[in-house]
Image: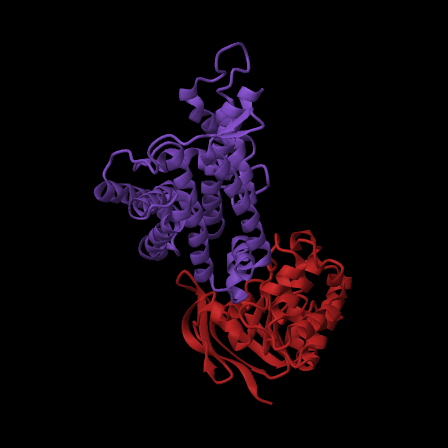
Length: 296
Length: 238
């Protein structure tokens, strides 16, 4: 049981936190801009490299340098929105989807040009795990990732329900034409969506980079489970996306536990397929997601 | 009386195809103007043109002294023009109170509390539903919420696209009464209506559109008595 919690459950929640933070952005962008943002994984990577660069110059813990990663990711997202997505806004959204594929390639290539294609790490050496009650051994990063994600989820909920911008965002997601008729500034709402989506992606990117290492494919490799999480939570439902992230993260990690006999139920090298299977099953049987989001 | 809205020689439609052609009408301050006509006559297109949701090929729309032809839709609320579309006119996942709140974003009313209380006294049904998502309301309640949202910014001109569509006769009467109450607060109202006879009864001015063109205009009473209007749109003798 203790082994299960230390080696499977906590890492699963960590992975779920990463998926959750990425999926929130995907879900919000789909809800408001109405397109599947395939460059979202690469926005995560941009954020991860932003913090990596900050770590080289400022001798602080990477999590404290998060604002640098978020700023770089937000700047990147707002720039591509202005020059690549905005001109396509009035066209059918498939144009924007394809454009976002191009943007994903641009981001990845730029990262390779400026930072190189190799693997980088935030902190060298081994960090000691936190030991609770002499039994639970939790990597500091895992504890930080899980707590910070839950904190962000609560803050996001209050932002969306209490703040003016949050309400305007929900209104645009509900009925974009009515929102314009009611005088809401849609472009301002879109900017807010990118700022939140890219900031959370940067946080997810740094967690992912700290958990393994930072490389140009970091976010792209996580895109599939994040989309699965966004669909599971119901497209356009940010809180659903967070729940979806944890469900996919738990399903992937826990599928490798030795539930039957001594061997892993699913070989760890196939664990990403679990997220994929969940997504395919959802699209067939419950395309609106668990929390009644928009149909894709 | 001064003219609040003036549409002159307007030709507009969608995708390069005109739906209304050379339509002209003037709306006087603090009046109820009704646009009636058969299905497909372009009544809604006329209203949508005023809020810049169509392509305008010719003509002009003026609000007071401001030319608003082809203005940005979202820029009209601050000028004092609020519209209530026929369908999808509430934000279903937002609560009733949040829907009303959205109405104040583009152009905050002078006294927020006072405006909200005035609207809730016009629509007492909404008072008990403030924390419910708008998607759970009945058709009539939604219509009231949609009008309430539009009134939250203290507009000068209120545009209503078939506010009684799909409502029960009881609600229909209620909505028409409310429109007169709203006019009494100093708001000018332009509405498109299917229920022509009832609409003409409350109308100060009425405009009949046929095939996207002006057919006849006049006071509500005059059109109710007009033989051609009676025969074509009011289903003969009452």
